[in-house]
Figure (tube, rainbow, N blue to C red):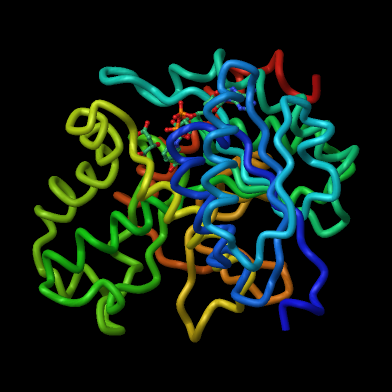
Length: 332
Ligand code: NAD
Ligand code: LMR
């Protein structure tokens, strides 16, 4: 019962931005941590966005959410991450049309070292960190390496939006419901080098590539569509995805909290320990099964043909280049 559970603290950085606005109400209504789990929202922003954030807080009050125990707004990361069990690192600048996400490295990379240190100093013992701000994988690696006191497997970068996009594209092509598409892996970086793997995915339990039966479409249409979907949304909206990004983050947290059903898996960018030949320490998108107690295992032994192996190499190489480009922020 909600009256008996202790509230959990959820920190949202960049809470005054577009994803923040899509996220906050859903979390306060129980969609992140469940319908019987009270939450304290800890909202971090930079000074220029504080006024808009106060407006959002007024709206939160006006919703009278029964699960919302308290709201803290602050510009101080040490306050924002106090007692926090879930740190949702959204606050970072979005790319504009014509940019790649890695063009944001120098602007956004410097945000994540101090936040990693504040998490290590103030968060709750069960802290989990989910990074959305782009370039998400490398920002997540910066936060993780800046918080050596926190176990590395508590840090996740978001590839769930790509997973959802890939499932939607395959379902449309196959003429099936999205729920029939399972075992979708987004290998590597949340970028244009990611590899959405239709060869290990399944549709109605069968290999997705066999059900689709059109290798040319998979290679020349499906992969680039998923890789470029964020850019297409920016082109159409004049702003980067927000509703779908917030939705993916809620899906991601729910997947980490729950036991992965049956023989399915989900895509999470987690620290590589060399699985599938990926250099150790990169924050890499893998197929992952969660155990329902906050732990997870990377699914090993999947078949990757020469085409897939090339794709994995390319996305790992890009992540190595990103790591080299942010050396000044690592553990600083
Ligand atoms: P936005 O510009 O609307 O909001 C970002 C907010 O972050 C702003 O309110 C800004 O004031 C705040 N901010 C900036 N620096 C901060 C700091 N140091 N501490 C706290 N807050 C800070 O952008 P948005 O559309 O909400 O997107 C946020 C980020 O998420 C962008 O980097 C975007 O590219 C990324 N994104 C990632 C995915 C993904 O799938 N991983 C999907 C969509 C967007
Ligand atoms: C997305 O994939 O929609 C986000 O990463 C935003 C972007 O820059 O594409």
